[in-house]
Length: 368
Image (tube, rainbow, N blue to C red; front, side, top):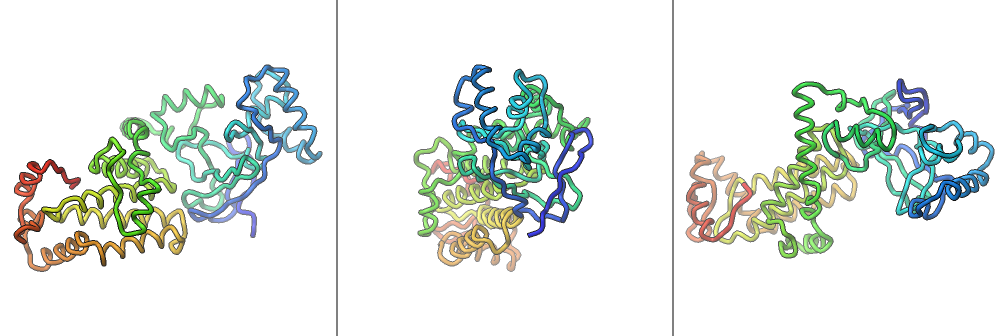
C-alpha cells in the first residue's frame, strides 16, 4: 500500500503532515506503534526528578534513529526540565493514565475542524489515523487537540489551547469574523449545552439487541422523553454538519434520533402521524448518507442500517401503513392539512389540531 502522507514544513506551525494522494473519508491513513511508553505516567503526581528519570530511561531504550526523530519534535521551552522531558511532555499522548509518543503522528497539527482522527489506541501500544472526510492531495491533515468534537466558542477554545499547548489556533473556523463568527460561537455553545445529555439519547446495548429482534428501545431508565431524544440527537448532528465537522458521531446521532422517533411512533396506538413517518424515513436516509461518507457504502454498518429500515417497511405495522398512507395522500391529492394523521379507531384522516387535541388528553406529544 503506497504511503498516503508526507511530513514537511507547515507555514506558521513548524512541521505538518500532508496528503500525497486524494484520501476518501473513512480511509486508514496510517497505523503506528508507540515509542517511549511509560505505564501510569499521568496517574502519578510527579516531582521533577522522578519525571526526568522515567523519561530518560525510556529515551535510552530507543534506537539511534528513533532518538534522532524524538530530538526533532516540538520542544515547548516554557516547560521545566531537560530538553528530552520537555519534548516528551509536549508530544506524548495519554490513554488511561499511560503515556507514549507516536513519532509520525506527533507531526499532526491541530484544527477546530479536523479532517482526521486518531483512535484504537489498544493500550497505547498502537494507534490508527483515519480520515473523517475527503482530504485532497497536498492538503494538510489535521486532528483536534481538544478532545471534544465541538468544545465551545472561539475565545474559550483559544484560552484552552494557549494554556495547554501554547499557541493560538488560526484554522478556518477560528479565522471567521463578524456574523459568521457569532453564528459559529452560538452553534458551539448550543452543542455544549447538549453534550452533557447527548449520551442519554444514544441507543443502549439493550436497545440494539431489541432492534435486532424487531423491537424498539424502551424509555424507562432515562430522564429524557422520546421527543427530547429525537431533538437532542438531531440537533447534535445538524450542528456538527453546520460547523463543517464529520465523523461517525453524525451518523450515530441521526440513528439515535430515528430510534427514539420509532419508539414514540410505536407507542401511539390512536394515530399514525404521517409527518412523523416521513421524518423517520428522512432520518434513516441521513443515517445511511452520513455513515456511508465515513465507512464504505457496502460496509457492515451501512448494510445493517439499510437492512433494518427494509425490515421496518415490511414488518412494522405503523411504518408499513404510514408509508402506504403517504403515497395515498399524494396520489389522491388530499391536502396535508386534512391528512396530518390517520385515526386508527375509525379509519378517518384528521387535521393536526384535531390530532393534537386528542393526544393532549392522552398526555402524548409527537415529535413532528
